[in-house]
Each structure stands twice: as C-alpha cells, then as structure tokens.
Image (cartoon, rainbow, N blue to C red; front, side):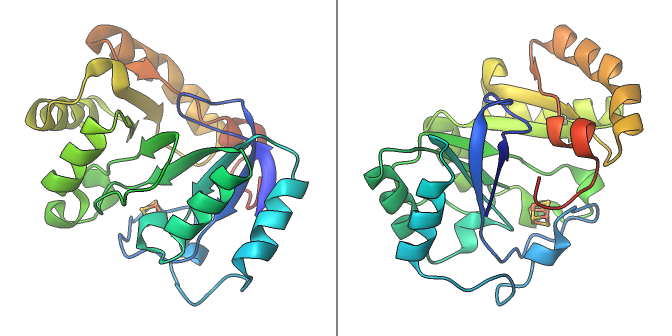
Length: 211
Ligand code: SF4
C-alpha cells in the first residue's frame, strides 16, 4: 500500500491510495512489477487492518492494482469494505478475467498487445472484454510504434470499443523514452479520436517502486 497520485488513465493526477494485490499469471515480458507475480509474496494482512491503513492514507480515491487484482480472492470483500468507508474505487486490470459483481466506480482495463509477449488467447478474452465494455470501462493501451496502433484499431473494431473510452499511452519505463514518444502518441490519438494518457509516475520518478 502507498499514497501517491494516479499516474495514468482518465483520473491521472488524482491523489490516491494504492492497494497492490499479489499474484499475476498474465506474464508480460516488460512487466515493471514482476515482484507482484507470486501470489504468496507481499505482506500478509487482514481486511480490517488494510481498511484502517487506507483510511489513514487520507485520500478519497483508492486504486486497487496488482499483479492482477481479479485473480485475488479478496478483491470482492476489499472493494465492499472500501465502499463502506465512502471511498471512490478504481481497479487496474489486464482484462483477462470476467469482472466480478462488485461496486467498482472505475474499471481501468489495460489490454495487452503482441509486444507483451503473451499469447493472444491468454491476453484477449472476448467474454471478459465485452463485459468490461458494457460496464463502461476505460481501455488503456501502451503503444510504441504505428503497428501497435494498428493492433489497437483491430481490437477496437473486433470488440466494439467506443473511441471515447480508448486511451493511448507511451511505451517505456524511463522518462526519456516517454518524452521522445509522447508527440507521436498524441498525433495517433488526434488521428483516431482516442484520448492521450501520460504516465506521470514514470515522468516524475522513473521505474521506482511504491510511488
Ligand atoms: S498484467 Fe500487469 S502485473 Fe501482470 S504481467 Fe502484465 S503488466 Fe505485469
């Protein structure tokens, strides 16, 4: 758990408490949180203790992330507990699992492209994507080249994703890479009616953990 600002997506810049749930079986080649893959890793706690920590974080927005939070058995009780505290809840997910019936305010779905190195059958699950689309989720794509944008367009057409809900973000874990790519990503957004999202945490702190 840590307090920061939301680094990307439609609420970028919002002061937030982050709860990072352990465990991810997606396996992206460029994953920057590989320490979160092991479901048995991290710091053990109880739901009550975690909710008390979040409350002390003094932000009204909570970002539940991972790992892949939808693989974690405590996601439902956690979201219910956070909502019980009157907090706004966003969940960051790769969109590979069907969303459970929980009262999430904002789903941020980061569908993975071929450059993730994950086989398509594992990273694009039609039923899950359709459900997220119907829930009004935001779909974030990390792009680094025109061919990545072509892939986004194919996914958008295949799953009927509204352009206004699609965000493009620059690939790269260093500030310099972000700065070099941003003008091209803005141009791709302008051309296709997508929204641009910065990755503020990388621009501000680079590949640091817990920021
Ligand atoms: S889905 Fe997220 S946490 Fe899992 S491997 Fe990919 S980038 Fe890492």
